[in-house]
Length: 458
Ligand code: SF4
Image (cartoon, rainbow, N blue to C red):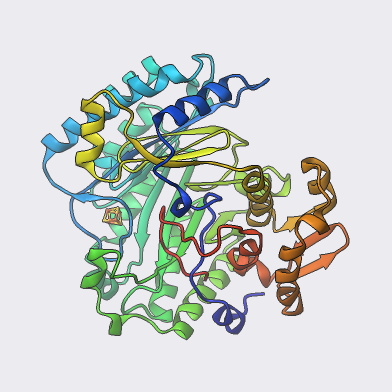
């Protein structure tokens, strides 16, 4: 049901809905006191939610030109070591805000390149986190790390498994040498295969691979070859992100020649090739950018109505409160979002002064809470039972969402959604335009997601 012409018609900027409202709606009025209030309130829920920890490690040893992540290019081990101390200090300030019996079920290290932390540094950090928080024991803890296969080998992966990590996610983007040169990321198939095989041998529960379409010099044939090579590695999950060229915002992207970028038709053909190849190889399309093997927990969670969407993409874990640690990290506690200082100097200065380093955030209004739920349903389950939804929130859906229904009507005429009494269903073609459909529920008009700012709708 992939329709390239339809996608081309709707290919314009839009939020990715890893949060609603998007991070651009966060304001500096939300401070550490509001965060402490949100934590206190979350402790007093009748059944407090479990916790999820995200640790951001910003350092990378070289810049990939397409990158829009918060990262600092540095090869200085002293900086990493000093940063580790700040993470520990932040954990010490944060943990007392949460009841000690709230179990941490998820731990995720992202970046940057978190595998620049040595096994010894990681062990120290984990010990400190265990002292501060109640991390679930053994395999009950879902512990993942984003890996750069250029700087991780089999020994490192086995060391990770020994520390309790059971998931890894590998950046690949494209194996074509010309594309890799154009984006300053030379990474061989062998390097990648070594890490994947080590993860399997070490008993990791899940291996994911990230690809990007729309990169300079990409061709449908070349990307098809990358897809063939990636499928042969048999990862459990594959993400295929669309590259958005925004050199005015991201300095590194200025090194990419705009004349080398594929045109709109080629971009859609690249995505079409991915959809076709991954479908043939037995991967299910989960939603925005994400594919998983039919045996994967994400597919089961989607079928059972349990799928969630958060800052790391799709997740099987029902509501956890998310505590973000590290420069630029985002937290989601109850009905609040907050984000740490994005500059390393400001992050460290706050902690040196004994303050939490968060500098912006948002307490969701009752209207935000309702809309966030509707957007979550569309993004995760491609349908919204408006009757059950109205009953859950104590409102008459057709009245409260009259403006949304008016915006959805032209999408229904294009066969992207079906509007029935009591039910909105995304059609198979509409599933490739979830962001366009979700945007009809968005009351923070025009705000763009800065968390992973690949902001084209397709
Ligand atoms: S893509 Fe990953 S490895 Fe490359 S610069 Fe960005 S964060 Fe670093």
